[in-house]
Amino acid sequence: MDDSKDLLLSSYSQLVILLQKQIDIAAKDSYDEQLDEIKSLEEGKSKCISSINQIRLNVELYNGIIEEHSETVFRYIEQLSELNETLIQRINLLYAEASKSMKRVTTQRRTLQSYGGVNFSDVISYYFDEKK
Image (cartoon, rainbow, N blue to C red):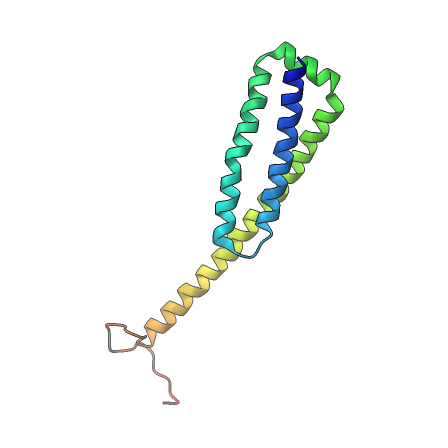
């Protein structure tokens, strides 16, 4: 039981650490690398979750650990819930910023093409500036 208890508590602790690292990564500036780094930490999280689920399969053992260390386990679960919500908010913010950037690029491309654009095959522009 002690091995299972230690594995369960260390898995919860490791999950908290990995989620915190993901949040720290999401706070960085470079968007492309962020998602790759966040995704790479998911493998470690899935191993921890797998360990927890293995222990949960033995209901009596899991309930015994929970009864003995309920405050610690619930504190970990609360932390995980808060950190997960924070991570979701930061990732949604990254997607929102990327979406705005993509809309600006699309608008700029359409404008450039409307005026004949650089290296655009259509030599007749759709708009004329009256000042020219």
